[in-house]
Length: 188
Image 1 (cartoon, helix red, strand yellow):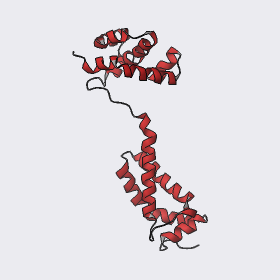
Image 2 (cartoon, one colour; image 1 turned 180 degrees about the vertical axis):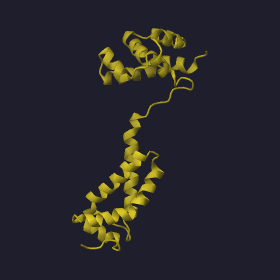
Image 3 (cartoon, rainbow, N blue to C red; image 1 turned 135 degrees about the horizontal axis):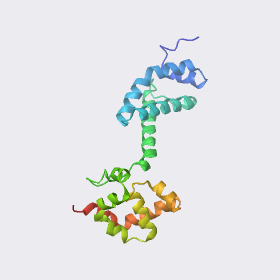
Image 4 (cartoon, rainbow, N blue to C red; image 1 turned 30 degrees about the horizontal axis):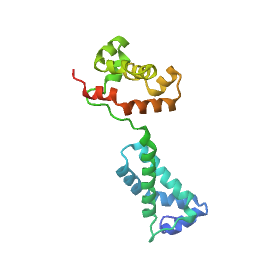
């Protein structure tokens, strides 16, 4: 058994490339706190930090054979890899971010879910005329999503459309902007 504590990073990386888990553990112990602090600076969710740090060291393990270390420390390479994993995670999560509702409307979906349909329609009276002006399927989709508070996936299942078709209809309705204008400019 070789003691890895005092060895330079270059040696630990080389030994890791040959499958030496103790060398890699020493490298991890030496730099994991700095990588974790850096990950916290890039993202604010603890689970994301854990994922990024794990991915950083997994990448280091898998690329140890081709890893070129500047100077004598692996830390600069680890920090760049950490940043790249954080950017990838941010890109992966970006399509799932929701567009916020205009001020004062955020609770309408909860209201619709907790009250019966007639009361929800009454509360949305200022947009009902625009919903009624839509063609049959678009009107049904707006009723399901805006009035009843259902998700687009649930609405797609109810009307027998694919999720892709729902996305196309939603984009088309957004481009027409009639309902959105009514929601944004209503006066109560």
